[in-house]
Length: 389
Image: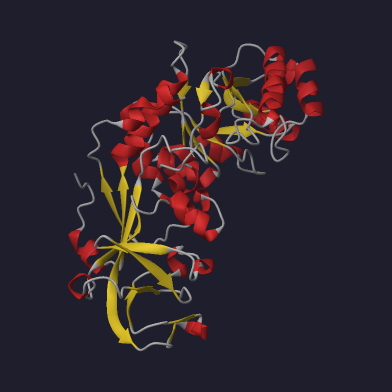
């Protein structure tokens, strides 16, 4: 069932990105149920940073709130402010924490900073005094990722001086896993041990450790709140294994023109591809300005009318060329739609071709695409993700 409603915009678009909200909701339910498989009352958040991994934070957030999600994470304060407009009640946590001078913005929009070091904690505590109210806070303890988070030294100071939290309500204690997608990596157990030690020293607050892949490490990693991001959007949380998540995005682009060329002719800038036979070449309406990476030259394919068609020549800003020699002419006329992403080539597949990860593929999805939201999924494999975990 389409909920986009802008037929004129779709008609004018060179490429259409379809986002299945029902699949996102089903993925969330499956991950939530994985956390509850042992009977514990584990809650499940949703990470909506980077515009919900390119799928639209406002629309996805509203859909997941309707599904029962009650905790949302973003990276930047402006992401939180925008999300608050559509989610007036649930907690919204800002992972990057406090930037200098942003305390009034956090208070005005009822956002919760993830405090990453003692100076941020001191600043937030001073804000509680200045605004004469108790403010919620999250303490992020670094267990080994060595990016953001309280160091072991800062953590020990907080353990020894709990009074530093006066005026604040500790809403959550969290950490972030280094290599959760590698289930055999010993660093997972090491981080779990460090996190447990810190939690034992700071009793009374809810706790969170598992990201998308961390959920599949098992109940020991679940604690009170799961924090899936990538898996919600169909990215495989178990690389090298069958993907337990439903696909969320499909991308189709229009053919603008099809032409015949002789053997031994080049196509595109720099003559990066040369025909080995008389060929038919189709040019489609997307390029690197739409997040289709330049390094995909001669290294990936698309799908058209049941045929796999190779991408040939350099990726241009607005155009990509494909070899449609083996496709019936009736199926590759101007206006026909080519599947760029979808069931035949997932974001994980395209990431392999581009030598990156599916996170980058998703978050690069271009703003020039017409976005068509559908919400017709009624249940299926993702609802059994708890058993897969």
